[in-house]
Image (tube, rainbow, N blue to C red; front, side, top):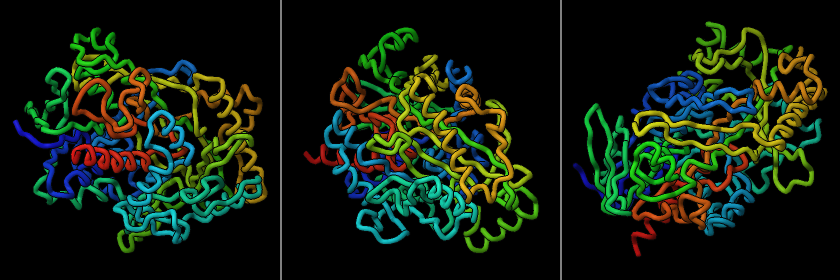
Length: 538
């Protein structure tokens, strides 16, 4: 048995941040436990390599949900990072802070999390390499890269088309104003992925007060009455225990954190009792309020070359590989999501209600359970997609066994509300509206999907039910709030009803942010470190 001041469970987007910040002073001893292994695979480090690790069980939990009745009764594949850096090591690297009103809404239920409080945290964590701006940080550990000089030519065509469709162009959606069509900023540095493992953990690895244990699957939180005292974990087939003198911080993400709480006796009492788990603290909201962004793509065949012609042929692969090896530039140094933005379909809305995506490449998603590489199509093509920013469908997850190695049941409940389906239909129509602009018509041969036969709202709705897909933004399953009857953690991220236990990851989001969730999760790690250190000092 070992003993530390702090035990962090999960070396993901928030866990790596906490491991760095809690050990900076040299005063605290910290144990960081990660169920996965190292992030040294070249397919993790090369930005576009995320297509290769999309189903790789060596770095990926490979979750599959239960069926969603209103989503054509389909299961959905949820890749989540099981590796140092967590999902920041396998994601598409798009960096979005979110809208100020997202955090003002958080502040209403969890004081201290308004935009005025979190904006300085985003500022200090950023190392922005784009145009100088007072609202962007340049001295933080996390490199945020401006791709404007490197995108594929047809991504510029997309921006022109969006403008012709009536939307403004926004040079920095993370600046003073979020709205408009844009090029996506990505977390890369010198052509390599800037995960939280690289940005936060590597600089801290040599500290004597930090112990990092990989392939260490935490199975249970230990309690003395209501006080969390340590964790049990399995490493290399051996059962081990680690004690925490001060606190245990769960950073397992929106799936693993609520799962571990339930396995440890904190959760809905009926779920725990059904699996013979003694109730330490009844907490009805653990695993509830599951939110996610659901997206849909329109596929187009192009009349001009796209990334397909560079990334699919053997000689094309060799050429871009050499370019990357020699200069760390070219398609391999970027994300496939090069363009997009945030717009308002409902002009009376106060914030953007639709996020857009443009990829100068096309590929067909495989059915759940089929695991090919994401290989581009053999013809020139591209994707235009979207997701509603604030879906109203809510799901839940719960353990299906007392076995800590068994995956939980995940019920997304996609398209469970009329609003969500209506927004998906409207988004598909908007993609077609952009496709009809002169700029897009100059490069489009034809629409492959939904296709010319899909014209009515009912037909579009059926297409959406069949073909829409997660955008991998699962959150809110241990949501934060002052009221313990509607939340799991308080505004200082302490689990209601117990002592010395916090959660700091995307599961604490009171509501889903406008945009990608990795940047807000890193912010949570930063702010959690402030809260923990402040509480420890008195």
